[in-house]
Length: 64
Image (cartoon, rainbow, N blue to C red; front, side, top):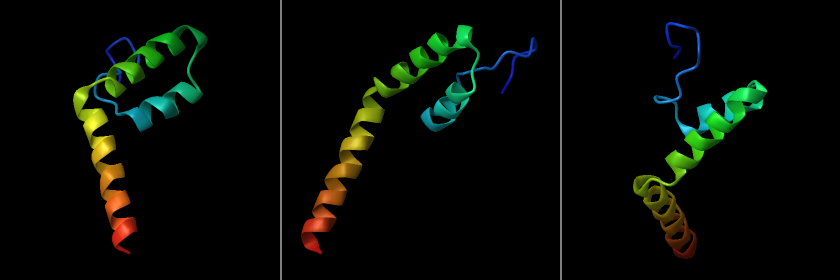
């Protein structure tokens, strides 16, 4: 999504989209994108989701 000035709006993007955008970003926008990625990763919901998935994967691998 872009603003009316043509700049990329980072708010609605998820981490995968931000990392893809980071690969071809201009030098002046790299810090802004890194900040947004770190902000999303630091949210409590993100950490719990990663822990929950890894815990479920461990349980499934033990059961099999």
